[in-house]
Length: 565
Image 1 (cartoon, helix red, strand yellow):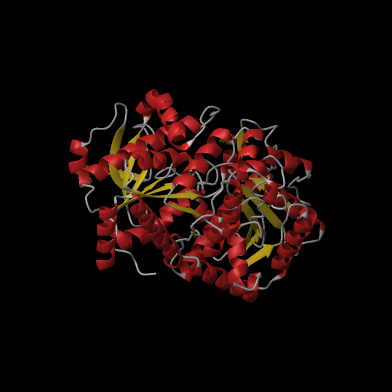
Image 2 (image 1 turned 90 degrees about the horizontal axis):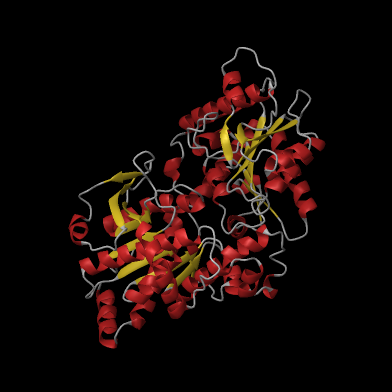
């Protein structure tokens, strides 16, 4: 699809994860930004929460007072709402407006009442992060309205794109107050679908029998689900990230997405040459093996097979339980090399282990107490992951053919032990496993193959489904092994993963080099260059539906302008 260069004045995209690295949506936006910036220059404006202070500034935001200067000098925002304008310090360096939203709490009840009257959003049973997300989204909607009115509404098209339920109130506010703006709502995972899975209920075999509203009441998710459903129903264009989640949306939210927008990736995060990638791999392996050697007191052979899982700390949904059981099974079927299994999943960290940091600089090393974890936790005795590692009997001693080490922190380069970013660690791995039960897309396996690291995922992930639609399944053909997973075949999936990993431990250098090339080729096929067309399609759908709301003459005028351009 051709780039629609002239059919909108400004494109806003609002997310809680703009300049705020929390989860996968940050990766979606920060990697997509460069492609959008190339196409539209500074007509794309990202809107995020200003949750930062002078003592704790965002490492990703660079304030630029000259940007949107005329608007800021005249903007009349509600008391307690302020903005900072700058650039996101990522490839493409797009324009960003960070919104301080504290003032919105004072008008919360009135606003919730309006949203109930206008769109049936039931905020009565809200708890947790609901108020915070809605206060930000409301403020973001006010800011977008202010910019649009300043630039002028006559004969101009604006698109406002909102990601996840946390921004839904912003979409509804604009629909209410500025219906000329075309709106897009993307659910990256339905809140109720995630909750069904997180509560150990089978989703897929029973999906056709679930009623989203009824399940929301049962699982105490009424407020979030009500908001998400209203945003999906009211958006001019509703999108999600995979076909598997599109089916879920149709059943639980009552609307099939207009466009499926799979998540791409930018290659600029990957070392540009084979030499640089080899050096990155060497540095990562040296660091990983040094940390584990200090933790366990074991000399870690350079030939150690390092396999990892990572992502959001959702024990069942992300398949962390299955990963641990699979690598435990791998130990029973005699891998050809010693295996080190890393669980790179952030948890409730108390502090980096002082004894580990001391051991890393000591000339002689002995096994530390609890040689299975790199950082102490606040909930050391109740964390699901460490409890599973203990129950499976991972001792990480000299006789252990498979070792398991839990790295329960964000790998941002300053965790106090590993002190490397996640993207610096990935090249040092021999394989990754993401056996998710609930995975609308699956950035982690895509990131893995981008660095040439073969990965295992499941048929319950959007990425896994995309792989099966494009390639012959298997490491040799695409760098990815997609395991068939359903509601009730846990033991078989465990066995299949263990056998797949054992096969990789047996491969020679030539075969592994071929697998690496296949993996990196797959990642290029999943680049934003190839996937951005689906977003362009969503822009056209949103603008077309927004035009239908406008007075007949104005709508005809805009349609003619779009055809001429």
